[in-house]
Structures are given as C-alpha cells and as structure tokens.
Image (tube, rainbow, N blue to C red; front, top):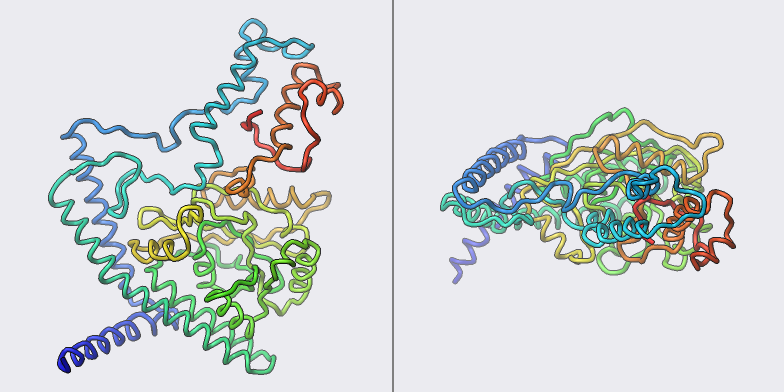
Length: 468
C-alpha cells in the first residue's frame, strides 16, 4: 500500500512540475513555448482529414439530408409594401386609399409561418451549426457510421480530451483562480499608490493568462493601437462568460456587475480589494440613476481602468450582434468598441444558459479541443452632435458587427427570456394601417380599426419581420 502512495506522490510531482514549468511560468511572462501552436496545427490536419473522409463516405452511401447554412427556409428581404404589392398582382402599386383585399392576409400568414418555423431571434440562442463534424459533437445533419479509422480517431479524441486535457485544465484553473484570490487580497493590503496599481494589474493579467492557457486558447489581437485606455468604456459583443478572460489577457479592465454569493462572491470581494471594480447590489441594479452615477464617477477618474461592458445583456451564439442597451451610451465618455469572433471548428464557446448551468458549461469548455478566436480593437467612438443614446448604440453595434463578420440585428436579446413587447406588434399594425388608410391617420383611428393598446416603449427598435 505504501508503494502505491509513493508512486502516486511521484506522479503528482511530475505532473505539477510539467504544469508549472511548461505552462504556468511561460504564461505568467506572456511567453509561448509553441506547444499550443503545434497542437492546433495537428488538430487542423486531423479535422481536415476527418472532413474529407466524411465527404467520401457520404458519396459511397445513400445521400444524407442536408440543410442550408442560412436556415431551413429562404425569407424575402422586401418591405411589407413590396410584398403585399406583389400579392396584389392587379394593382401592385396602388396600396393606399382605404382598399382592403383578402389576399393581404396571406402576407401575414406567410410571415407568421416563417417565424414559427425559424425566426431571427430564437436561432441566435442555439449552438452555431457546423458544416462538418469536428469530432466533438454531431451537428443537425444525420451523420452515420463512416469508417473504422474515423471511429478510432473519435475514441482517441475522447480519451485525450477527458483523460489528459480535462485534468490539466482543471489544475490550471484552480491555480489561476487561487492565485487571483490570494494575490489580490495581498495587494489590497498595500496603501494606494502607483506601485499598488502596477502590482494589481500584474496579478490580474497573470491569472487570466494562466486560465487562458488552461483552455488551450489561441487568441489573435488585431489593431492593438486602439486598445481601451483609462477613463473610457470598452463595449464588446457577448458570446460567453470567458469573453472576460479573452480580453483580460491583453489588458486590465474594471468589471461591472451584480454582487453574487458563493465562489463568485469570494472572487468579487477579493479582486475589488486591489482594483476599483463596480459591483452593485440587486436593489441598485434596478435604479438606473444610481448605476449611471457610479459609472460616471468611475470614468471621470482618468487613473482608473477602462470599464468593460457587454451591452447586449446576454450571450448570443457567435453569429450575430443584437440590440445594445442604451444605458452604457448615456453616461458620456469615450467608447472603445471591441469585436470578438470565435472559431466554432475547435469548440462551441456559446453559453446557452437556458440549457446548461455554469458547471455543465465549464465542463463542455474544458473538454473541447481548444478556444480559438480573433479580437479586433476598433477606433474609439464618441457621441456626435444631435445623436441620441439609441442612435449612438446602434452605430457602435453596426461597427462591431461589420468588423467581426456578424449579422447586425435590431432585436432585443432580452427576448431570450421575455415575450415580444406590444409596441413591436403595434408598429407592424401601424405600417399596414398607413398603407390601407393613407398617411393621415392618428392613434384614435388605429385603436378603433385594429383595437390595439398604447405602446409600452414607443422608442423601442423595430425589425420589419415582426408579426401581428
């Protein structure tokens, strides 16, 4: 029995030496020994071979059903007036004047069925569809048995991911988080000074680099000259909780969020000792004026770290950017937009909080092949004369979507958990009423004809494909 314990102790020493010497220490100094690059290259070659083998196997077998990368059905991009005009073949241009034809109902039936089958919002909260199997999970395509060699490669991948990578990543995560708690508490004991700020930045960036190495993260930062500066606000699209780790590898930020309990609460209380993060109680989060004041006070001090905010308010599946909440753009200051785009070939970074809890999500992350992503720092932006907060938010969102190759959507990400606002439905009713009655109609006429209620939020953004 003693011999078994000695062997286990020797194995633990060797394991810890490898982790500390080959991964942890290089990560602390921001140095790469090249192991991750070699691993990614081998992985790319393996996935390319698997893809070719699957394609060849599909030709040999019966044709498998496939789906369009753009969705199940093709949707028309025309306006309501154009599409209804097309239905009214006899009078396609003469839509006003109080005329109503029964064929108008087909337009709304068609839009309703399209959105029941696959709308623009719901599909943004499901995992991004892959064109080919990445030896991790199967896509919606019905892949069948292809070959013995492919099955052996898949089984070998399971062994590597769960028996080698998972223990290694858990070890690095524990080391990184423990270092973060202990380091920030010790730095917090020092009096306020430039030395304390320097040590705080060093502790934060070192711990985040260790955690990133634990995910085999390969991150490419572009246009570093546009990196957020102190006294500003960094806004980025939101795919995953690890977005913070990805960005904090290249610079330090002040976090904004709600006070939590448990392990998250321990981390929050420790890191706030060394760095002025902005944490709110649950009651404060509902008070927009209190939140705005805290943020304004923070950015007014040009010695404090830039605030990191994800204006979407929820995770989107790495294909789109949804509506930015205007609160971040009302407080003034310089906005530093950042676009983040993950490569889904190596692992699905999207956190579907409706399907997976945090523990399950982290397990999926730690058993994926790797985290590969690109980060673009966009030029700083400020609010222009005559531009309100909503317009400014939309301009920043469009810039991020364009740079990251993401779809720019006006829908609120809150639809992930909430019902569509009545104001969005009413806007479509207004559009149709203006076509039938003409432009000279008022709210009373609309209420009488369509029996709609007053809008909850008249300023809410509208997307033309909403249904009645």
